[in-house]
Length: 337
Image: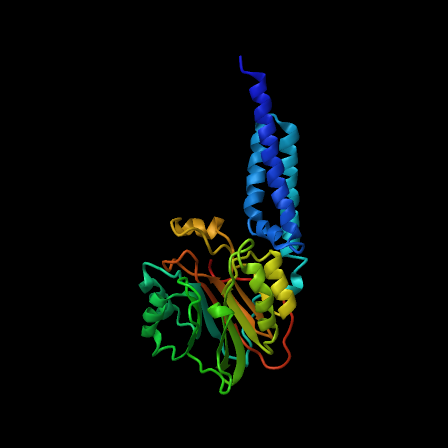
């Protein structure tokens, strides 16, 4: 006959696990109070799935009280996630639209290269195959600085920031010339680059950014400085980077609110441990690579590309820059992902 005390212990442990999941979900919505709380927000959807699975298991085992609590918490968190990433931030997002009739279409590729990528030829093949006008890269290590020399003829206009560590800096490579008198700049010890690019007579600011890891690492310290740099950029602009933060997090929403840039939504998960298969990265990875735009930049299509040997997926966006005053719209991705 089973020991009743063991059953009670199991119920208590299950209840504590449920309470822990619910607590982590809840405090993730309080990231504006402290960066430590925002760190939980990045895993919100994963916690929702765990809470729902745990609740279902407990319900099957007839632990109705705890199970019901977990299921309710998961449902509430899902609703709050939808609201937080949708309605609440609607004015911080853009949606794809048809190309402007009087403007050309341009293409930007963003990728965290992975500083020690074992198959750099995949990246070079991707660039050659997609033919972007502008390439924004992070984790440009010493190895990559040498490898990227083969693109110098196709992309003669470039800035490669000195690496702050062995992980590497950031880079912007462009087929299109940089604006005369607007020298590209490196900021944040090589973790951010800004260049003014001439797109057939129209000037656009392009920034490549690699934010550090969330609290307790250096992301909260770097964020205010990054926001100040981006807020100074006037006119049409694109920020492409590895934010190490989910789009619904306070970190990303704060950056958008304070700089006038809006997040291109719908990119989806882009990062997972390098040892994991690519198909899993697309479905259960973290959505931490983002494109942001402002000043009337109109994205026509955006989506993740195939495996390039990195633990991040590449993002490709087609866009144009209109004449006249920019229009406020909601950004949604529709390239194959």
